[in-house]
Amino acid sequence: MSPASVAHAARRFRSAAAVGVAGVALFALRENIPDPDAVWASVRKVNLGWLAVAVVAEGLSMRLFAGLLRRLLRSGGVRLTGPRSVAVTYARNAVSGSLPAGPVLSVAFTIRELGRLGASKPLSVATLVLSAVYSTTTFAVLGLVALLGGDATRIPALIALAAVAAAVIALVRLRRRPGVRRSGASRILAARDAIRPTGRDRLVLVVLALANWLLDVACLAAVCAAAGVGLGPHTVLLGYVAGKIAATVAVIPGGLGVTELGMAATFVGAGVTGSMAAAVVALYRLISYWAVLAVGWVAWLLLRDGVRDRLATAGRWLLGVVCRGDNGAGVRPAG
Image (tube, rainbow, N blue to C red; front, side, top):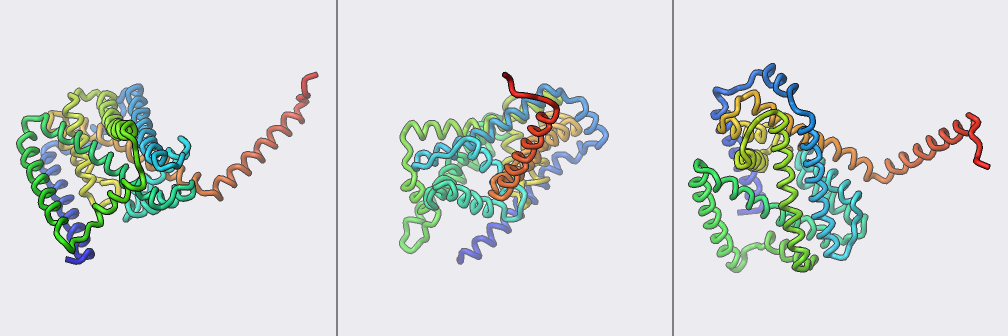
């Protein structure tokens, strides 16, 4: 099978999976379709203190992922400042989450930005590959904790885990055959050759990747507290994992629609009313998706040299106006 045929089949599978996830979620919500007025009433009653906690948790989550990129680059011999790494993280997230073929464009954008900072292309690619490996692995651990921790999801999770294990074993055996392409494995090996983290670095990378996810979960938990929805930690984690898994199969940038349905269906299944579940999901997505997207496009603009030069010129002009105004007001130097 040609690479084009594989890609086409993968797109068709993702489309079918997204439709299936949306169908299951809508079936679960069929008797709990929220009234817009009831949802708005729930949103208006939120606790602003807890909402601020949610915003801070999401900001820290993004900052830790930026720290993951910095640590990988440092292992490859390139140092990236904190503000720059945060700006690149937000900007690449905006490109990935809002444009068609966003993940591909995001990779190209990040490689270009890191190259401007002195990172070679192999090092930039290795940074992206290994950050994805650490992030995906730690999310898989969270997913297993969420799925194996519930009575209703434990058996399906074990069946799915066995199926994944069988698929991995079959894939490994297939790749050992002569003539089989090893593009994915070769990229990981090349990343390992470009970046040589120490044992301490690996531990820090795992902690950063896991903390990135946990703070995102904390954002959702804080939104639940702000809306007055009393859910246990396991239910919050399960709803979070359901939303993220739904987003991975969605063909729409950011998993719009499918993510919200997956999370809302999980919360409704836990006994939350439709209006309250919708309010929680709407507020969480407002913070973790739309606000992050807006900040990301601002960061993207600020990373452009021309924009920074114009802002610096405008700042100097404004400073000159203020200084002239002070002098005109009769302010004299001391002494």
